[in-house]
Each structure stands twice: as C-alpha cells, then as structure tokens.
Amino acid sequence: MTKAPPRHGRGRHAKPPSQISVRWNRLARAARGRRRLVAAGTGTATVALAAVVAGVAFAAVDGDGGHDAAAAAQQKRSSAAATPAASEPADAPGDETADVLPYIQTKDPDKKVSKYVKDVQRTGDFLRVYTDLEEGDENSEPAVSLCEWTLEFLKSGGDEKPRVFVHGKSSGNGSVVLANKQSDKDDCEVGETR
Image (cartoon, rainbow, N blue to C red):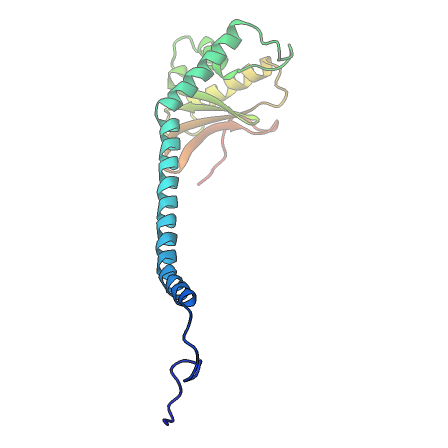
C-alpha cells in the first residue's frame, strides 16, 4: 500500500461513475468554453446593432430626414400664416421672429445697419439677433441700433419686459454679445467684460 493520497475521493474499491454522469460532466466542461464564446459573440453583436441603430438615427436627422422635417415645419408655418389658427387664442403672440427683419428694414431704408442681420431667433424670454459684425464691434452704432429697433418692435407687439441680445460672428467660444437689454434698467450697451 502507498501513502499517496487517492487521485479521486471515491476510494479504491468504489463503483465507477455511470455513463450518464460521465456524459454530463463532459458536457459541463465543454459548455464552459462555449458560454464564454457565446457571451463574447452576444456582446459583439449588441455593440454592432447599437452602432447600426445610431447610424440610421444620425442619417435620418442629418440626411434627407432632416430636410423633410424642416420642409414640414416650413409648410406648417406658411399654412398657419395663410389661415388663422383655430387652436390659438386671438391675443397669443405668433412667430414674431419672421417679422423682426422687415421691421428693422423699415427703420433702415438704406440698409446700412440691417445688412448685418443674418438670423433672428427666440430662446425663452430672449430675442436674439445674429449678425456678421466682428467681436470688436461691441456697443457700435449698428449693434446698438439693432438692439433698440428690436426693443421697439417687441414693445409695439405688447411685450412688457422685452429682452434682446445682438450677437456678432460666432467664434470657437460661441457668439459674442455686442449689445443687449436684459432688464428694465439696462440700455442697449454692454458693460466692460475684459
């Protein structure tokens, strides 16, 4: 007799394992490798599917889908302008951003100032006039005039607390504010920011 421990815990005279338990143990050992393979394949397939879905979503926004949405919005605006909206109350303000530039042009028939206007947008309580004026044009005559004329437009439309920002060319850090009115105490000039 040897003093070495047995290779298996069953003992020397134990009955051999059954065919079913042998097959089951082989299957379990083989499945461990397969589980890893299946998990890796599933993870890769999930990432690939997410990339395809994201690509389709971006294509819909940036591709023709974005143009279709813009065209639908434009058509909705033009049909709303052609016929009064039944769902809006009579005293509700419409989309005044489309009317700002014509108003400014009536104040500036020679287009010495209005030629700088590139876009007008409403963001919350603020009306923003985007221009192609330079950053150094803070408190310049064109910037202040655009601010004052936009204020007049808003007041004539019934806005009791008009808020206006006139922006210059967009830089890497966003659009520069050339003139603004943020409160009733403000004039259209911006303070020293340097």
